[in-house]
Length: 259
Image (tube, rainbow, N blue to C red):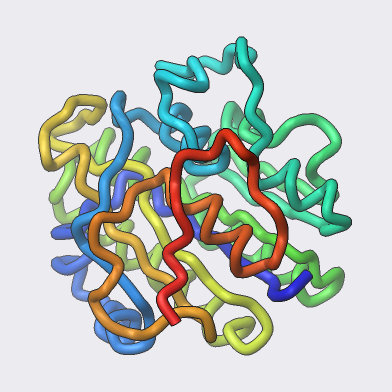
């Protein structure tokens, strides 16, 4: 592998929520990352279709998953986990929502850790603990860390932009900081959201649901707000470019490397 990558997805994180959460590390992310607060989610702006589009670089209308229930692709497209495996790489996934496991086909993950999102503790912190331990011990080539509390305990339980929602974003960013400071020299890091939300829901084409932040850190990225016109479709091609592996001919997105 040319370079190892950590991808962190903060479920349901709106750009204005990230700016308003009060965590001082947001300013540091703006300083050291290539980023945008105006990237696009997918239609429907729902967790499973969005993450499948993120890993497979095709729209929900192309891969056929239009809800949070997995259905097999009629015209299969290989995703980033599969491309890493056939290139000889090792992937790990840490997630707090069980259905998300199906974004990676059987056999494409070497390591996987699931922690139920309805524990009283911060699932995001527990998942980050597990990811940190595994990276230190095994050094996988690609790590996908999915943080769920912002969506479940923040948005759905209390409302998007509520005090609890902003608190959950801040906790998630604390965990991002930990991963960046611990592994930023060895791994490139991509931070994303799958969708936003409004009231206590998401899934519409409202800007509050469809607009997401993206951050890219590593030697391939020029710091600054320079990743405009990006979408979830660009995540897999960018990871492939950073790692020096081939994508899939069906992928519709583009690499966002800007150095």
